[in-house]
Length: 397
Image 1 (cartoon, rainbow, N blue to C red):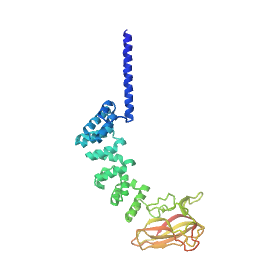
Image 2 (cartoon, one colour):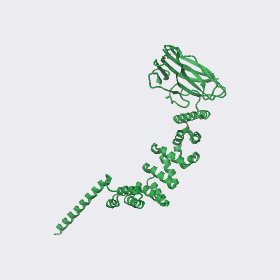
Image 3 (cartoon, one colour):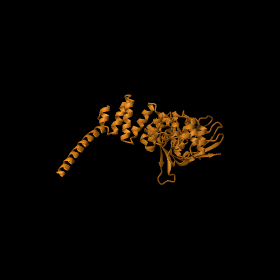
Image 4 (tube, rainbow, N blue to C red):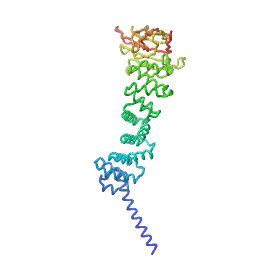
């Protein structure tokens, strides 16, 4: 008899448990599918699910039902102590209701239990900014900047919070974030601020080729020629940059600049010469499609005012056509008083040295060395042929 009673009780228990599991599974599926009403009754029915409490509370908050929303968010964090979304919403509501002390305490708590989780950093930062929790704001903003996703927004918020005061921002930023800040300021063309940040970089960062070239290019673009030259020379550079084309052309700063039109008019490219002492040279091919006005290969060269220079280079040409073949010219960069034109390059010639001499006026700190071709006025005007260049050297007399 006792065994029969035990079996009966066990069967009843299992039936109740099965029914409960069935109801729970059905409710869990509704929560997962977000298939429930936004009512307190629904929240009470789904009182075992923190997500349901959060979602319903979120909608109540948008409907300006602050007290109900607050209660539901509290339920959510009671059910799931590590529910960061609910904790942050709870902090936001407390702040909106004027309970700043509670809001700060909750935000501080979220920052402690998830100090290195990127997912919530932006929300924590915005909330810290709005309620004045300075150390949380500074810590999170420094955590955000290294990642591209929110970098622009983070730097804009930082800049606005401190009134575009670069000196103050530099005291707040981690040194690893100086370069992203520098690049952001360059995007806004804030020249003085950019230079202030550059001075704070360590020497290792200043010597990074891509960053250095971009910074110098920024200074040139904003008419800070003397500053650009000073930075370039301080980094140990002088004379022609990349004279033998052993490196890729950077197309900015004091490096070689060039443009290819994307059509069959000409192609400028760095070429590797197999089984040759030269290794790399610059090759320009003209395809006889246009009567070109060409000036799409040049370099800005820092120079000392009042000095005499001689530029030498190695040249090779094959079947350059028309009465207007390419030539080199040298003129002042952002200054006047100098223009020197070299002879037209030969139609066909093996490797040989060419030279051009020039004097730099007192008012000039840089010159442009450019390959040029003028349009022909003859019937046969469409230039074709090949040209190779290598070993550019600048000699100071």
